Image (cartoon, rainbow, N blue to C red; front, side, top):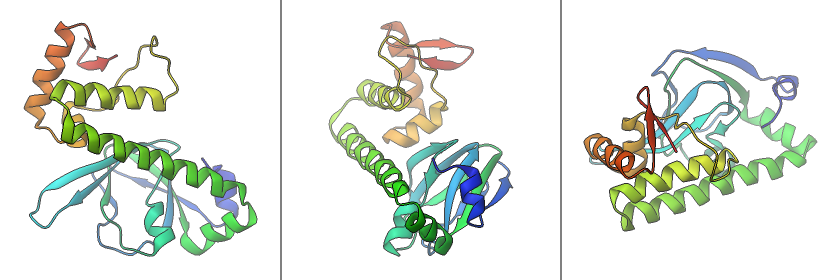
Length: 197
């Protein structure tokens, strides 16, 4: 995460968005660097058949849309707010000037992109090779690991069942049944409708 104060030194502004607002549009050119001050952002792609696929869900402190900035290719997906969110927006040219002036942030960006590549590799293996219960547990365990929690620590899953389904290529009904099965097997707990592992 790049500090808000440094981003503002280079001309960043903070904008507020309501839930379900589009921040970046699939197919458009990248013009800005985006970092989440608060809220959640879902990046979804729509294929030629009109089917949507959730690529990733980003949270506070994370940035999104950088691959298109570095490669000058159109955005491969749309970024949409899941809740009211505040986004720090820095114009592309200013972002690259910041990186040139503070090269240590290149490592930060490369690490973030590498983590996302690892996630995409993991999820593609899960979707093609595993049963529903393994898909759900693999995603939850990945999210838990991303939060630097040990296996013994309890993790509250911040996603809805629909969001889980979208991320692992299942129908929401399948995820609901799978969560109930995992609860019966003692793999997860459910408290006030939230999933814990």
